[in-house]
Length: 490
Image 1 (cartoon, rainbow, N blue to C red):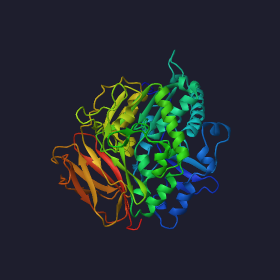
Image 2 (cartoon, rainbow, N blue to C red):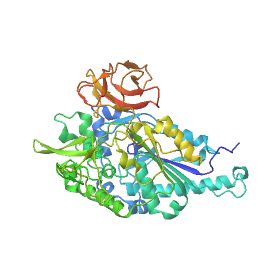
Image 3 (tube, one colour):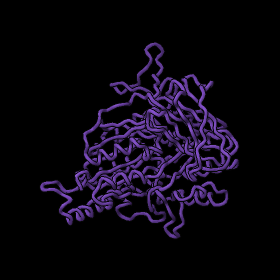
Image 4 (spheres, rainbow, N blue to C red):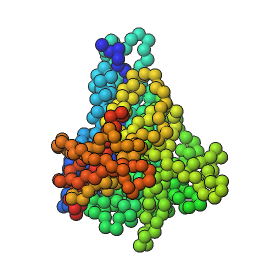
């Protein structure tokens, strides 16, 4: 009965914005419960103001978590319904991943979700995770010891398996680095779309007000919140990404402040990036699942506008040679640009660093945790199946591009499909992610404004809603993304 099970304890760690948050004093839901709360004209503003980090929360680190954890806002669970935020786009629930793990363990108690206050620093949440994972492992070991048939003679005591999405992988790394004994008790760490080198999209979130001539309510609220959050600053890219024409620089704290962020929080985050570049930290049993072939912002150009520093995202990165210097065109000396693609949020090199055990999938960042191939790989790793051949990674395959800021009712949404030679045999559809209303099949045509052979379609929503866009080639697992359509003034 238990031959096809793992006896290890499993912990699921969500990404940024993937935990449900509530006001600890009142129990009022703040995040992850009802999308209407964040788009509501009257109440959304107060909600986003509450979510802004106060002075203590901005300073909290691992030592704070060990001495006196903060209590103003409480994480109560993982997302159970689809969610959406400008620039970072859609986030799917984690329920499917949890169910996959529950099915390959002797009892559901073996699987523990770790909700955390993603607004706060990675180091702070890492310390809390270390404590929670140790307690979970000890409880599970006691449970297993009480049921002799769950372990065969000579079988080792249960260890830990972490399954971490996005920023959750950084939280796991912080936990294991802070607690070496916990690292020794860890069999495997599965990271799904984790930005080990950071993500340029964090800068674009901080820069929302600068980049939009007339930002809507939701955009203004998200930027004002993000500018106060250590968690957002901990996603800043640490690689050379600021294109200066004849040179490419790493972001400085001053750059981040000009782009709308906080200089002190940026200093701490970028210093930590520099430490990892110098010292590194190997995750035990690390397997990376990497989304590929999706159009992904990988670098930035600074475009001054009306006295503001506008960060313009670019879909290319820069090659670094074995000497750690920029690779340049031998004739012109211009830095060599290359589209590394990614999962729409994290570019490929950032998600795969630190391990050679990599599985590539065609999928969008926020929807990877419900992707059938990702779920299959999580199951395989939990059961200690042999690693598959390292396929993919060349960036070829179906990609999906949706508007970063969502859509407005009555205005057509531009949806773009990349990486395909022809629309023959390909379907693109849009349906409600909240009500299950039937989908709208769309007609794909060559995009006359693109030179890369991309296909495009238009969708006009008839009601405000969160919509799921589904690209199905009938040869691969469908690629999906979420798009929020709001009333015109939102």
